[in-house]
Length: 387
Image (cartoon, rainbow, N blue to C red; front, side, top):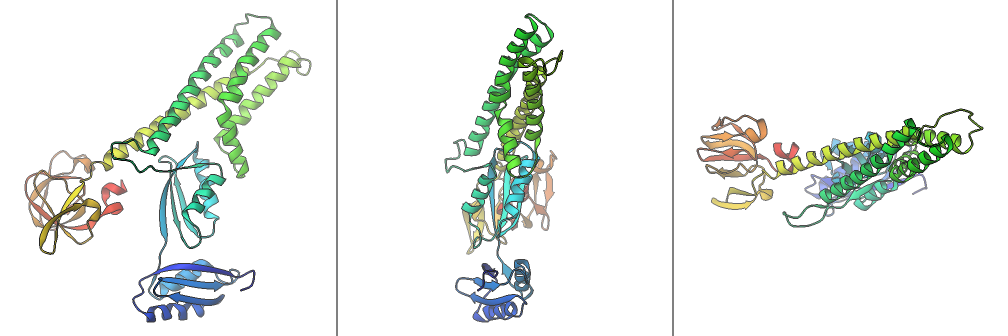
């Protein structure tokens, strides 16, 4: 294999015998640019040597799909910390989508979630995390704790909100005197300007340090964000005012704008605080919504009723729900008649009649009769999980 050639490994699904492996090999070897292709049935993997200047990885995967098999992609969801605006999310997406083996990376800024579709043979989870960290953001690792223990996501968010509250309080405490002494001259001009300088400088470079960090991250990744704008605007006002204070001959008779720099910092910090609180409440509401799901499901297996964790319910299984019980997963009624309270999903307070052939949704409450239904969506595919 020459330097310009590449070797990839793909996870293949749908193979049942050695002939399946041979069919994939035969199709791949006919593809222009593929030097060698070996499919290992036992490992369900395909190993391909190819020339990337002639054929792309997508074309190789499409060829496998054409002969009736699947290329299995892994998906992972990660909690991201340190984002301050939508450009931060775009920076992470751009960095990950450049990596070989990443098919798609999407960041939900409001939920602070990163969803990555990738090939584990080309990039590992550790590699994905490192790529996020390399562009200046953090991956919040979940803690394996009991249900009544606050998760790491909530702790990180609470710490972030607490930190912002402290910064806002300090910024307000210093900005108010700056505003007062800017418009009410209690000292001679030079001394008054020096006092304003002493009050404004901690706001600019201590309290406002977070904006400089954010601007640096953006510039390092060749993009501008809100922090870049704030840092540039307030720094310009502070530098100009400092020159007027200590070298007044450069700008004779000019006034200072320390109040502008400090008030901009304060207002933006207040906005960040409100944004963090809103996102925290949204996440808490989502967690509470997921908590509405039933924990146990009653299914028929081998002709007998069995109680199993809701996570173990399989598509196609028959589930039994008695009056007063929550419906564990989405499905289609096959037997029984009842009224189902669906207000948790639809907001409708009046129970909806359900009979054979009707659809039921997980987390809704069965009110009156016994229902038997066939599970059609479980786990992350249910309506509740999608919400």
